[in-house]
Image (cartoon, rainbow, N blue to C red):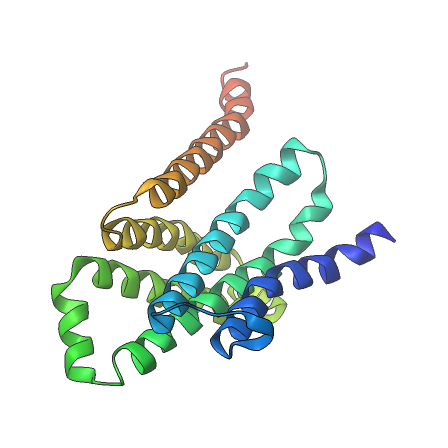
Length: 205
């Protein structure tokens, strides 16, 4: 029963921030985005998208350290939720913040570093979202894993986008960069441990 409840619980948890932002945008039940609703909506969607991306990377270490392989069942759902938040973040920027002025949008992407890295991160996530199905996994085979390693570059660029965007309080984006660095260190160490037995055995007569 606990296994069957994992996905509904994760779905509800990932949906709550979006529900709150939607309620705040329409000022439901007294919720509000404040005096600058577009900026608050942009920041909220982007922040939650980045948090969920980091959570996606945390799932494998958690499954290994806690010896709970069933956690891996949640990784695809969390990743797709992250992409949904970031796609909405991008659409709000296009429509509400830039009013679909593609001249200004192109200039921002080309001239503002934080926009450039943020846009690049989002573009990297698009093929990952498209190929997240079992059918694409079977079709691509080993190439699927190579393709989905782009998520590490996307997360790093997303953290840099956030860091370069903030003007005063940079503690949150720095914390995300530290978490990302710790996850990469864990991954590197795990790969070394997997390779070590093969190296030792290859030296035996």
